[in-house]
Length: 226
Image 1 (cartoon, one colour):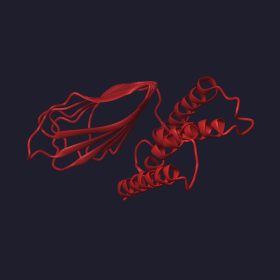
Image 2 (image 1 turned 135 degrees about the vertical axis):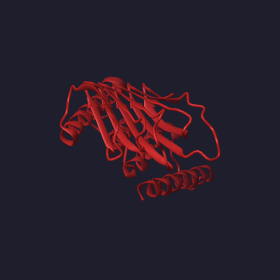
Image 3 (image 1 turned 90 degrees about the vertical axis):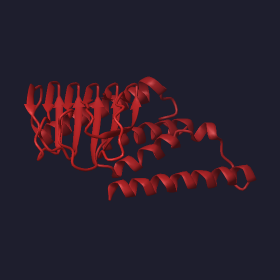
Image 4 (image 1 turned 30 degrees about the vertical axis):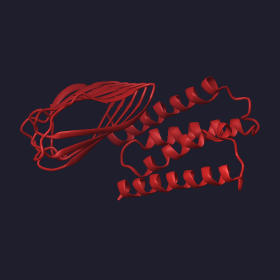
């Protein structure tokens, strides 16, 4: 349901933007694109609020876009904010802080460093100031939500049993996540990043293979499928 709502909102926002551009060109309304460009960040963040993964990242986009917008409009006391020190850096620090707090309350483990065998019952994984490697060899994999905050995680899916299409929601804040793949599935990777990277080096193909969709977000971090 969340994915459908996100898709509908994205479509509606694009249509609304198209209508505004037409009205502006026709002289019905008047606005400067240079002043209102931060609305793009806000619009990009709204659909993510309805996705299971990356909500904190979406809130960061909305916050950054909102602060930049009120700054551009000259609203006091925000008119004098410096883009980097007064907006971008504080927003990034807030994203990191909220991610750490959320991870602690949801999972209760900080600073752990260990390897373990994956479980088909595990739907969430969080690493905070630590390192974790999870091996799904011989285990059925049906998707997971992963967050790394000042830590690193590795999901080994090379020998996992993937019976059907599934999804990995991944977020990395000053951390890294590696998803090691095999020829047991196809992988599609989408994502957004702020001074980070979300990328895929996987090239497995085949019409009969299930598809694993990786939705990643990275803030000074990395999500890599290889």
